[in-house]
Length: 341
Image (tube, rainbow, N blue to C red; front, side, top):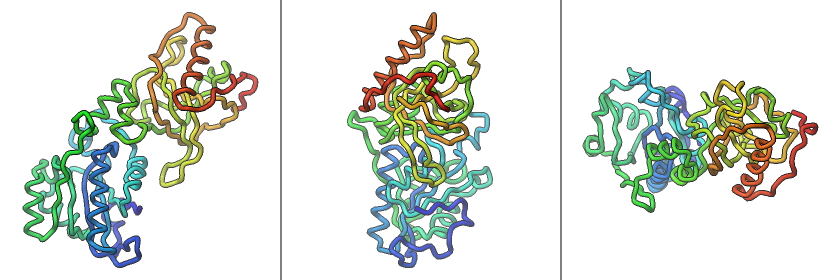
């Protein structure tokens, strides 16, 4: 999948994957925060329409960075469910040929709905078909909607398809709002159902107090303030994933017990962190490395212990239960003297 960061990176004559000269495109547009199951249906439909329009037709998605809400309401605290690189990776998995990432500014937002469709989708991308959800909004003051898009398409000879809502088995619409609600409640299993994959946070491994290695539970620490939508404090089962950013292939996928919080047993942890203990590993040197953490299930709340011994017993039990949740063998305990990183 090609990624175009801004209009200037869109080729004048993009080539289709088949090698045929571009015969226009089928296009969709949206933030696609989380790229949940509803988004995936729209993106898959764009690919279907492009293939139906002929071998030279491209399937293209238009997205925005930063999130428009943070531009219109700069004081709002809005962490994206998925970082832009992870969002693009999830979009690529749907079979798209290209994604155009538009830098979102107040100037860009001030154009008319007709101007956006005709200048960007029809003019720049050669849209022959536009596929969106029923809640689409675009143009100045979000004045463009599904009805106005149909009117523009009818006037310009562009096919418009409004994809019906995609509902979960219980009847609720798959949505970014629902995913955020689940993550705020620590229900990472339901969030994964909505997203179609485990929820992921990403960050650079930083130095901590090195207490975990002294106890036989070495951890990779991420700053929770910069990692994305972080679930509530507690212990989770999941995976630590190396690589995979900026188009690089993913490397090791390692089973991990993940602790979020300030570790209330001690009084010297001032900042909320994400600590991932890779089961059975004492040799991982991850400092300065960009890693991802995928959440599979919530194991328990964060607890304070009166002494070190019950904490160690609980941490060992966390390892056993995490291994069970992930379907991997229970590792032998790590001896503090064997920790090399």
